Amino acid sequence: MARMYSRKKGRSGSTKPLVLKAPWVKYKQEELEEIVIKLAKKGKQSAQIGIILRDQYGIPTVKINKLKLSSIIKKHSLQADLPEDLFNLLKKAVKLHHHMSSNKKDSTSKRGLELTESKIRRLGKFHIKNKSLPAGWKYDLEQAKLLVK
Image (cartoon, rainbow, N blue to C red; front, side, top):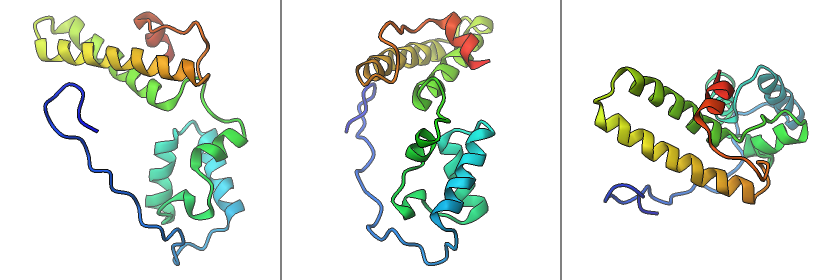
């Protein structure tokens, strides 16, 4: 897929190999779920959990046991109120807005803030359609500041 706001091509569509069994992983499915639950209760996002599993436990992917990380978190109802991708964009918008309040002439960051807010609105529509957000949800910077802190 091409980039939306630049004249560049997108990332390649390569996929992981089909071999889903790593011979060095000694953890069973129940042990993996316990580790994921423990990390999710600490407040880690699913991307952070995946990195911790890779770096500290030597687990290349949680899909070794045919379970996605997000499905494990949903099964134990530990997911956040907002979807992770939307929350990360909200954090970025709040940081950019704070930067713009002290650097009024930074036109590059102003453009970046506009693009980020546009992405938030589009992603909000997507999540409303998929019912992971309530129907009346709208992007508001003041609400985003409260959510991020």
